[in-house]
Image 1 (tube, rainbow, N blue to C red):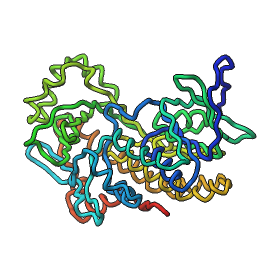
Image 2 (cartoon, helix red, strand yellow):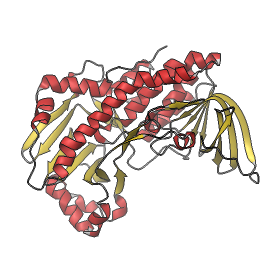
Image 3 (cartoon, rainbow, N blue to C red):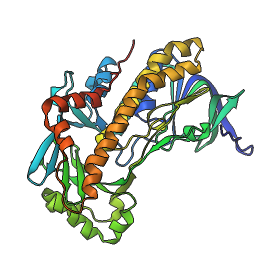
Image 4 (cartoon, rainbow, N blue to C red):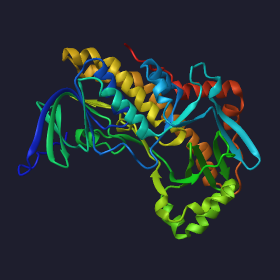
Length: 413
């Protein structure tokens, strides 16, 4: 386990004690903080940034998350946030289309995906948590070091614009994403899942007569995902891994033309991309820790298992991790008796669903995305894909497994 010492010349501005210190104010960390605060457990949430706004942050909220929000009495407020709803995911290649997912068949009060700005969602969750006196939120607080005693983590040191701070805690939770500093300092090494793809993200304006359902468009060595927002399209343009500089060198005009070739409806607005800095590159990576915990530390969300953007499952997986963690740890934290076996139980309850989703993402990447991007002879829908997604019975069963997982998660009161 790595550990460093805070520079002596810098003044440590604050020293506090809490029961649980959560590093990372994303969906998993914010929801876990709310759940613990609701149950009277002192919790400090550290967020490295000064706000929650990020460019092209995942905004896909599944029915499983809406069900959890309903169990918390928050779903009506969540759905008051500006959003779009999607009940189907449609695959299109030229004149051929196929429904890959029909969520309207799910037996749930919310049989659809809600596209909600993540910054607004996190603002709602943390605002709700502030209603509880045991909750404390520190924005602009970057965790720098773990504090260890007798081989067990017992707190963190963080840095703000004003200087250093220190939080002592019975448990530290790393919810700080795919580049988790907590994971790095603990020294846990993930098992990598190979990927040969990257995604270019950009925005194009949305018009009143545009499609209202989610689309995956496949063309000549191209795949484009269209995510509908209330006032724009978030477009994911899939490319072979490491090929961004080559695409950029071919000129912005050629890139715009390639978008129109696969999405002709965008011909009247593709000129909105005026410079390359409007295009963000996301490396498609995935991995999973063999062990999500160490003495005094638990990792959840992408810190424990980096999900690829395929299917938009990452937010929902992190939220389910948070719910299970709160269910398992509430009484243990109150009693001050958290043991390694309790942290292992959280991983045990979540590991099957997580590995299923990782394998599902890998399957779609290989059978659909890679096959399209790397095909020089044209591409047709593989028979296995037709079977899984073309037959309503198998498609609906797979959708339920993706949305709720093999072990559905619910909030325990």
